[in-house]
Amino acid sequence: MQGGHNEMVAAHLYKTLSDRGRQHLHYYWYVAKDQTAPLVQTRHKRSCHVKLLIVDERVGIVGNGNQDTQSWFHSQEINVMVDSAEICAAWIDALRRNQNTHLYGALRREDGVWRDAEGKGVEGAMGVDPGRFSWAKGFVGAIKRLQGTGGF
Image (cartoon, rainbow, N blue to C red; front, side, top):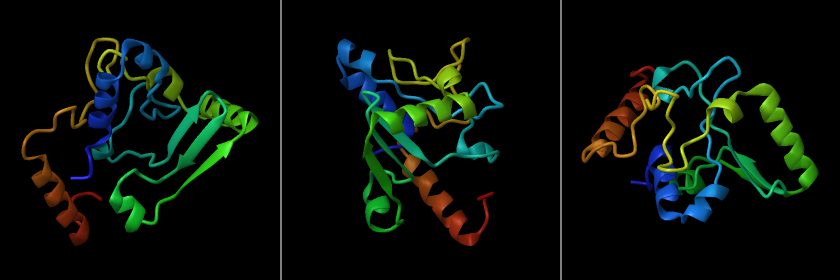
């Protein structure tokens, strides 16, 4: 109940922006250097919890903090903001050298959803609408994490 997962938030952003606004939003899923598509957490292969936002190639925000009350008050997650074109350029260069995100991770501007060349979404992803009882799935997952089961 914290506002949705990444796919929901991205799709909502693209849906609410004007056509002009969508042209300025570049939203990517992390894609590892040896991959051509995003891997979702449920695949248990690897994950990347870091978030990076760069505005006008000058202001950058990086960290592991989600924008929800759980992260703000309980999880001790943090983000750092810098105002430096040089640092932002170095971050962009490092990402392009060490990941395939810029090649394969872009969401479609029409709907804010990642799709491959054939139009298929990310395998194992929750989707834009996870369903009416998605909260129950999250609750069961939280219990399994506490029990040390469920592949976490």
